[in-house]
Each structure stands twice: as C-alpha cells, then as structure tokens.
Amino acid sequence: MRKFVAPSRIEGEVHAPPSKSLMLRAVAAAVLTEGRAVTIENPSRCEDAEAALGIAEGLGATVRYESGRVVVEAGVRPPRRTLHCGESGLCLRMFPAVAALRAEEFTLDGRGSLMSRPVAMLEAPLRALGATCETRGGFAPVVVRGPLRGGRAAVDGALSSQVLTGLLMALPRAGGDSELAVADLKSRAYIEVTLDFLRGAGIVVEGEAPGLLRIGGGQIYGRSSYTVAGDWSGAAFLLVAGALAGEIGVRGLDPGSRQADRAVCEALERCGAKVTVTASRVGVRRHDLRAFDMDLTGAPDLFPPLVALACSCDGMTRLTGIDRLRHKESDRAEVLRAEFGRLGAVIRCDGNDMLVSGGALGGGEVDPRGDHRVAMALAVAGLRADAEVSVGGAGCVAKSYPRFFEDLAAVGGRIHE
Image (cartoon, rainbow, N blue to C red; front, side, top):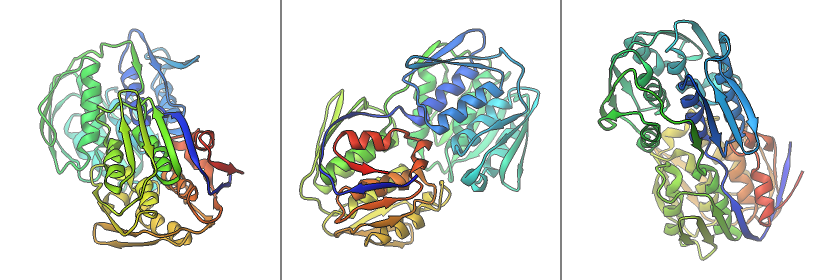
C-alpha cells in the first residue's frame, strides 16, 4: 500500500489509540488468570495485539471478541507447541517467561524483522529460575520448557526492558519466591508501567528497578477486567501533526501515565508549540518553532515523531540516545536519516546523538522499510512539506496503529492511496 500525503491544514479532535504495550500486558495477565474469564475493555486491534491474543490461544485460552471488548478465558483448551509472535518484540521477549511456567516445551517464533532482533538476554535468567531456554544463536526461535520455579537471577536491562517485564508478569505465579538483580536499566519508565499494572492486578513486587526486586510466588491475579489506556506513543504523531500544521486535540490520554512517551509534551513545549493538558484532553497548536535538545534514552520510540518535528524547527535540534534504535523494526537511526534525507532533511548521527537541521522539506517518494513508526513520521512530515510525500509500504502502521491514516485524515490531512 502506498499513501500520498499532501501539504495540509490540521484542525479537529481525535481519540488516542489504545496502548499496544498495555494491551499486551493485559493479555499476559489474562493468560495467568485461571478459573475465570478476563475482559479487556478498549482493546487494541493492532497486529502486535492480535499476535498476543494468538499466543493466548496457543497457551490454551479461548478468545472471544465482543462489542468494544475482548474476553479471554485461560486453561480451556490443550496448548499448542508453537507460539507465533508475528513481528512483536514485546511478545517474543515477554511470553517466554509466561510459557515457562508450564512443564510443556514451547517454541516462540516470528517473522520479518523480528527474526533479527536479539533475544540472547532471555537465556540466563530463565535458566537461573528453573526453566530451560534455547535460542538460535541469540535470535528467534526461542524454545522454553518449565516449570519456572523461582529463585534468584540477574537481569541486564541495557538493551531492552521487555525480558524483565516478562519475568515480572510470570514470577508471581511461580511455585517459589524470586529475586531479580536488575542492572543497567535504560527503559525504566516501561518497568514502572509494568509495576503499576501489577499493583492494579493485586500483585506485590518489593523493591525498585534498577536494583533488587523481590516477587513472592503463588500470588493470584485478582482482576477479572482491564481497561486499556490511551497510547502516548501513537498519539505523539498526532500531537506533532498539530504543532506542524495547525491545531489538534487528542482525547483519552492520561496526563499522569507512566508511559515514557508522555515526554512528547515536554519536547513540544521546548520547541515553542502551544500545549494545553487537562485530565481528558491534550491540545497542541502551531507556533513559531525553534530547535531543542532532548535526551530520548528512556523514550526511544519518540525519535521518529520528534525527527519530523525537528525538521520544521529553526536551528539545529539534538536528540540523544540513538544507541537504543539499532535493534528496532529497522536500524531506525539510519532509516530516519536516509528517508528524511530524500525529502531534503539534513540529519547527521554523531556518537549517540542525532543532529537535525531545520529547514523546508520537499516532496518525493520515501520507503519506511517496514517500520511502522518511521512510516507515521514521514506521513506527518508530509503535512508541512512543500509538495506531496509518497509513503511506500504504508500498511506497516497496522503493527501498532491501524487507524493512523484515517485519524490523520479526520482532522484535515489530505491523504489518498
């Protein structure tokens, strides 16, 4: 699918998409809640969420779609031995620990870019906690066999927090108590999201990350329903669209959320956009935009929308943390540099910094290389380009935000296939 985005005036309101990451945590919690059905309200229907629900079915759950909700009931069917993760990094790194609670052997596999994303960091902690775990030289497929008993394990959080999230979700259901010694955690906010989620589900985790986390075994997930909050990651593109091309209001975002990408509001304020935040709405209005500095080490998913923003800011913007971009759906730093360069942007990578020179963007054909966030960033940049931007492979946005182009068009984006 190719989408053409013409220079546009943005004005209107849209509801934030459901959070993909919270949806996946809710599915994992439902799988770990045996004896009653769990309802997930405001579910995400993105490809990663569909992959997680497929894994739930593979682990023996039934999944039933109702109006505005998904109902998951664990322990109903015999499990399948292969669990397909699609292209979801969180599925591949979180669900091995969940599957390892069982004595059967499971293989977690994927497709596309997921097959080149590293998962070697799964092996040592799962083995230390009583399971077996093998990877294909540090990559998918991942083969696990439990039962996960508990114990003590070291977890390296330098590359990803997703393995730690999986352990925190699974270990409360292990037979024994556990201690996780967490070091070099780069994505602390994502773990705070997980810990908040667990507290809301009645699970007790003692300690803070990085550091020592203690998880009692034999705990029970106490909720029979979860409501998925709005997604700051997807909404960031809409908010940047407002700053670039007019004015927008996004509803359904929690201003007190632990989601790392809430930091988009700080970036928008730093560059001079007009930002208003209430309990039910975040509004952004275009103003004179100036260059800004932002450390995105803890929020790497903000790089794509903020690159689109920086291209229209007067001066040189510095975004720090590109080391976090090398193992995403693409080498995201290089793809951003190259594809925005096709539109005339001047972007340079210097060590761990990305330097973006503000200036007018032209139109042209771009290829996000299958990376959903790059596709959305290029589309948003097209709203303020001098000519139409043609985004190839635009269907990849379905990985996290299937309605992105529809929502952008609803507030004035001039988009056609």
